[in-house]
Length: 493
Ligand SMILES: [Zn+2]
Image: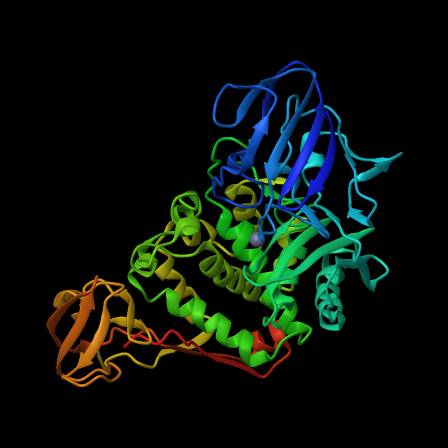
């Protein structure tokens, strides 16, 4: 198919050439596990609607799409900027045929699609949708080194990014050419991976972005080259895998590891990030396994509510800790986490990873994937001292944002007393002051505007505030440090 694209503020107009028949707009974008229904952005199309995302069209047809998203997975068109993640904009007919785009702008354009006369092309829909398209009169390229660059309209300091991706390239090899499509925004923080590029959007005040760059960059290998066999994304129907803890979590671990080794961020900040992930294993939601967290991502992780710490675990957090454990164990045996990728096929199964690890004398992988994530605490204790520094202290079981309750731990005194998230605590023992644990307290709360009084009796904190110490050979092997200490900052009252 061929798409001729005319951007205008907030809308993208497309004239398309294909075959008379059905075109299908993807309902989600690869690399992101939630059905976004981006086809909802079609405002006008010359065609007959067959279903929510399929249309019967003639050989040549036009459509108009609303494009005003600040999300790196979607599309934005303004009077001086255009960013397109292709699956959010272009439909498919036969996925195996060639797809090209012709851009009707006179601005500089950046994409990793192949340039062909006045067009940019991919040999299949899969290839075509795997490169963003960015254009602006102010578009510039910031070179990181001979094979990596940043395409952006903003400024970016790339020295630390260079050091961190070098750590990954040292193990996996350099690409021919890799592009980070980068943008600052007033909201959003995130990235999405492609084979030869990634798209990253971060807020203006966020400086700590090296680990995010490393995460998306390592996806070039884990997810793009190597992928769980059951994660075949068909663009219309959810795909289920047990292994996002490996695909995403281990990618996150490699991002943390390479940032740590290159000293790309303050060591203390990385250590505290690890401590926070460990802290989450102490909450009721850690009864969920990594496999279940992965399989339910479409309806749970990507649709988190205020109760998530009671009901689920992030496969990023738990998978990252699994990565740390496996890396430490592999290093004891003269290998490291990267060696896994040299020993599994491009479309891997749990068995492929498990067989390699067993060959190395590590027989825990299946258990880590299928048993409750809280078990990871026991594994991690083989590597490090983990102290729950608030265990046994008086507590209510609340997380607060100012005077607002943001989380109530299941079975905690706050739960028994009847507090629920979104309650605003107006008075603590008749005084407008912050909540603090004491044996018995009288709370005055506002719930949906109604004033209520609640008596709460403190209980014993089961222990959520984590302090870990990674010492000796493990700390040396992983971070070239004598000791790595982190403290979590999830402060439950
Ligand atoms: Zn990722």
